[in-house]
Image (cartoon, rainbow, N blue to C red):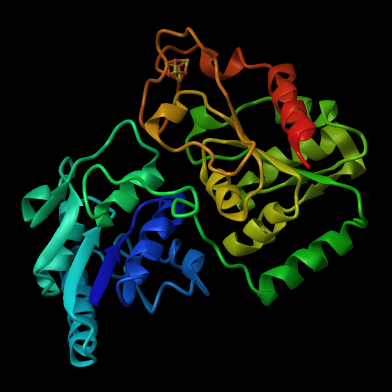
Length: 347
Ligand code: SF4
């Protein structure tokens, strides 16, 4: 038996990709998570999680005072677990900053596990190799692996999300208001925080998709202008869900779709958790970074033979060379061909 603390305050996709690690640790005892206000809702109803501490590191808990307050909360949580007989308390630094490592140390976790390449590594007591050749879900899972050579099964690597009744009802309402019946749905997620990762040909792709399918646009409220371009392209065939659903609501909607076409951004990871086949468009980044789709039958699209690609771990806001060929050279027909391949293979 052990009590595990997992600190994951990175991007939304990272939270989703941490769920296999959480599932692994739950086999050994209770698991408590530290997440951001944005990331915490992704853990709702997760049966592998006994509690979540929200760390608003850029808001209400910023600075040394905020760090100390959250550390105090975690210390109390650790003490309660010890009183309940939870065994050794171990912190897993799924997010590798010095701040996260300091949080675990201030909270009294004597064993701190993280990647040997992380900024906070000098505060770790156990350093795990960061394997560039592995998917990030597997890298995170390896923090809890018994040996450096261990490999997870496909089932162990499956990300997990748990939309509930509220999310199902929200999706039911949205589809009913769009007059949706029984026709198949194809989801498009045209947004990304990083401008160079936003493939510009979603409206053209929407026109090429089978006429029998409804086109569902997934995203936050900031993605509404991109959605309206798609609605303009295909009219009533489009269902604009941007800004209308929670993250788990979007996951539930993606679950009901036959397929998702997305940029290298968080909807891809929602689809991985819901098992929806995905075509991911990579521009300045590449699948080899370890953040590709995990759902069966998924495909990736990208321009090959471009010397400048990849140019950034995340994707810059502007193409440093100005031409943005990693996206402009990837036409709608090329992505539609991958969509057709997935469609042919689907049961
Ligand atoms: S430098 Fe190359 S990879 Fe980077 S954004 Fe420009 S075209 Fe894309």
